[in-house]
Amino acid sequence: MKYALHPEAALEHEDQVAYDETRSAGLGRRYHAAFLSTLLRICDGPHRFKTIDPAGIRRVSLRGFPFAVIFREVEGVVRVLAIAPHRKRPSSWMPRSNRRKKQRHRVGFSPPACR
Image (cartoon, rainbow, N blue to C red; front, side):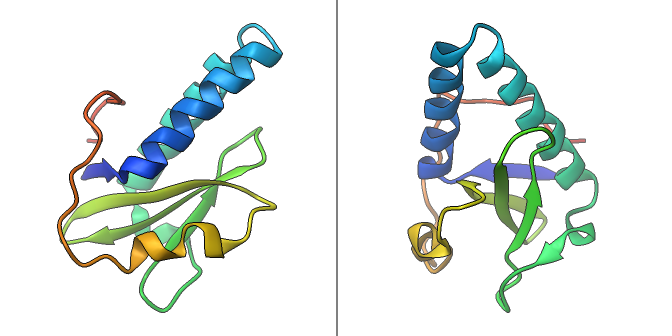
C-alpha cells in the first residue's frame, strides 16, 4: 500500500527528529526508526488500528515514544495527517482531515515505500 504524509505531518516528524537528537545523541535516530516501523505496520494493515473518528481516521502509537501517528486510508493510500504527542489535543490536527482538495506532499522526506 502506498502512503503520503501531509506537509504539516512531515514537518512535525522532521522537527521531532532534530529536537530529540539535540537532547541525546542517537535519540532522533531511534525516534525515526520507530516512526518507520510504525508506518510499515500501518501500510501492512491500516484497518487493524483503532478508529477515532467517524470519517475513518485512525491512530497508532509509536513504540517507545509518547507520540501517535494519525492517519486514514483513502482510495488505497495511507494518508498520514499528523504525528501527535499523546497529550496534544486533536483540535491541533483535525482541520487537516477536512481538506477535500488533493494536497501537495512534502518531497524532502521520503521513508521507504510500503509494500
